[in-house]
Amino acid sequence: MDHRNVSVQSVDNYTLLMKITGAELMDNKRRGFYFIEKDEKLGFIISPNADLTENSQVPKEQRDLVLKITEFQNNLKTMNENETERTDAIKSYIDELEELAKLGLEGEGVQLDLSKAGLEELEKKIVKIEYPKIKNKYLIKLMRFALIISCLSFLIRIILTSYFENIDYLSSYFMIIIGVQIGAIISFCVRKNQATFKNVVAIEEDLLLPCIRLTILSLCSIVFGLLTSSGIVSIQIGRFQTQYLYRQINQQILFGVICGLGDNLIMENIYVKAKNIIP
Image (cartoon, rainbow, N blue to C red; front, side, top):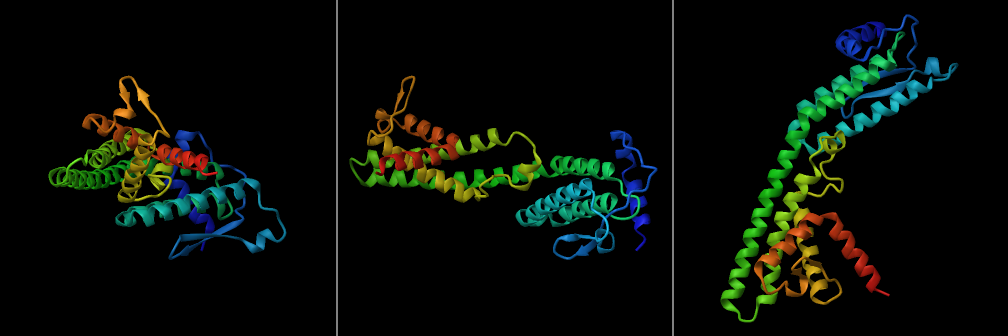
């Protein structure tokens, strides 16, 4: 393979980048200390050129670029696992990343500045194209499961109040669960209003599926409700007081909304409270 031809072709592909960033082709030919090989699983592999690395030290800029490209490649691999229906699109991103790797690491005339600028532009491109799709897809799933959980909770509450007496205390928890679903949806929309590459790779840091997240939040809200009813935790916001929580439906739903908005915070706070109680 003619490494120089690969680099020249890559430079042609990123001529526009060169104009935007002000980067110029270097007259002095810098040697690339790596070569790029195709790989079925990863798309490509970056390997050191043994003929060069034996007698010469690899420049720090090239080592840093290898780390950046490898991290970028791993992120794309994670995206491919999370978004299986976007395999073709992600494969095209990997192909572009491979060209950038060749541009900055392989051949006799490597262009590090262009390769770095290309990485930034590729990241912006992925965020612009993929983030709305990933966010909306997750939000639709979240709303779907929230609706299912809310309907089941409301149905169970109706059954309990219809066939049993003095069951208001127990039935109130199902209204709290309904409020949690509302709060969780609002929380997601507020927290994920920034389009970042980090959110594209993993829309939620804990990687929980929407159904699992809503189930855990619902359970946490019940535990939090038990803590308030036991007097261990007390909340007062304006006229809202947890001591009257089980008397009014609107306060039960509001309490659930607050729990849903708290998201990870409520999980952490319950853990802290339990840790302080246990000797």
